[in-house]
Structures are given as structure tokens and as C-alpha cells.
Image (cartoon, rainbow, N blue to C red; front, side, top):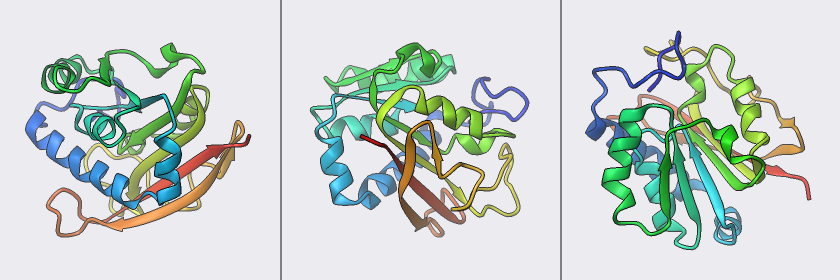
Length: 201
């Protein structure tokens, strides 16, 4: 979704919105179906979430549909992504909004921050992940490729349960880890790892 040399650039020219939405829908369907029931019950009590690097908006829309009482903000710095997602989803879902800006603008005011398949585009994803801990107040959910080798185009780092993302940072601790085999889906050739971080009460 983002180039390695300019992490906040627009989408690659060959990355069509329809294909992106289909891939995002797959990943978020996996995420939502894999999350433990207690985690989903907790999210249902939240008031505000942000989907960081929302792309063309399918994942944000899936959260808004799954949790109708949750105000869902999709954020991306790519203007074409925000235009597309706003046109496609904001008119039909009452609890959704899309913003073209950095996540820091929300302040420390979000119950849940979700980030799917974005951090692998950074040479050092830890600062970007740590940025989420300054915004979320209760939970962070991260989804990235697992043990990717060799790295595909635009991907810069391999993720495992042991790194490079920290086990604990800024009061958040990793509490749940789930793996999902995406082979045969047509959208990813390996495993995805979903990590749920919670902030200590």
C-alpha cells in the first residue's frame, strides 16, 4: 500500500481500489472471525476505534458493521484512498468516518486502534507501532504477515511472535496471538499473525 522510500505516499499505480478492498475484506474477515469471543465482547462496549492505514476502507466498514455501537474512524494519508472510502461507505454506514491525516491528531482519546498489513512496509516498524500506544487507551490489534521469506515487493521486515514488535511498551502488553493460514485465498501466500495488546488497568 505504501512505498518503502516514502511511507506516506499514495498507493502504487498498479494497486486498484477493487483489488485492495477485496484483500482488505479478506484480512479483516479473518481478524474478526479469529478474535476470541471475550475480546469481541470487550470491543462491543467501546465507543471509538481508529483503523490506521485504512486504505480503501473495507476493513473500517467491517468493524462498523460488526459493532454498530462503535464509532469507527478510518485514517490514511493517501488522498485517493480517503475519497474512495468516503464515497463507498460513509453514505451507508451511520457510525463511520474517514480522515486524511496522521493518527496523532486524535490525541489519547481512542479505545481501540487497529492496524492491518501496514507495518511491514517500514524498515523499522517499532516507532510506528509505538505511535499507536499514544493514541489508544484500551486495546491495539495488529495484523501482519508471519515469517515472510522472501519478502514481497514493498515489504521491508519479517514478523514473528518474537519480534520486531515488542511484547510490552507504554503500558500495553501483548495478550493474545493468533495465526491464520491464508494459502489458497488468492490474496496472500502464507500465514498472517494477529496480535492483541491490552493496556493495564
